Amino acid sequence: MKIVDIQMGDLIIPLKKPFKTALRTVNAVEDVVVKIITDTGHVGYGEAPPTAVITGDTTGAIKWAIEKHIKPQLIGMEIENFEEMMIRLDKTLVKNTSAKAAVDIALHDLYGQLYNAPLYKLLGGYRKEIITDITISVNDPEEMARDSIEAVKLGYRTLKIKVGKDAKMDIKRMKAIREAIGYDVDLRIDANQGWKPKEAVYSLRKMEDAGLNIEFVEQPVVAHDFEGLKLVTDNVSIPVLADESVFSAKDAMTIIQMRAADLINIKLMKTGGIHNALKICSIAEVYGVECMIGCMLESKLSVTAAVHLAAAKSIITKIDLDGPVLCAENPIEGGATFEEYKITLSDSPGLGFKEVKGVDFS
Image (cartoon, rainbow, N blue to C red; front, side, top):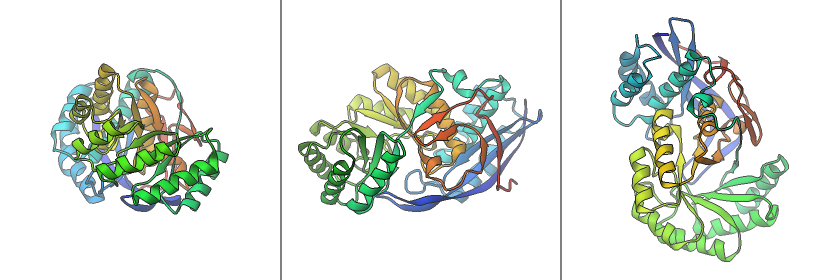
């Protein structure tokens, strides 16, 4: 199974409602889809969202990186020579993690097809069904409470609440949500780097004092401030999850050894794909640090890859893969099955995709 071409196309899917965080507001998924074609007729799919405020990757940068740097290194390679392909992919250029992730995902799709097995079984095969949370965008407290009630009615038992725009208002938001849904539903919060360290400590202690029963807080401070992250971790009882601070296995090792966070969040668009995400899983296993797997605003294409990783590895205990259920449409045939909070994998080879509709590949 030899690579003969790598093509790209644009995928645009409107969201059911605007997605709002401390960093941005988004109304549609607008991603780059990668299609790797082989001489046997097998096709692998991958996807990359241009999340400039987190990864620094734009649509143009993703396409340029793949076309001018990655593609020339992979054309003609055999899929069975997988380790060499991963080495080449990593070395083509620094950073550009989203572009690398899209190609990495497509290659893993083909790897599973080569051996006629679903990817999650090749990676570990721990389970084939997982349960995800759903994200509640940051708005005024009353609207967030209404959105939370709606999510609970759909069957979600874990909500991830976006905060980080105003510390005092964030406390009001969380109180309104907890009052609206009661205590039978787990609440985790995501500040998206929106607080300063002392501000984070103040807000989280107020939430502790109010008995809001927060499962964990995700990335309370700016990504590069490992010391600030540690200050928060050392001074609150609520567990701290490092997200934007962790792009690489080295980042994960540093944060774990510093005890700057209690948990690690893995996102394929930060790690550059599954290959490097597996390294983070191994480090976390050695130290006994549980991981969450999350996604950017992505369609079922790349989120299915994250589902396969989550299904393969027991160290991934928390799931934040709600991207596809936030979309108003689904142009992807095959892949994981998303039934609101329940995500199930089939035993189709690779990632199990059949067709991507509405994308003009070239």
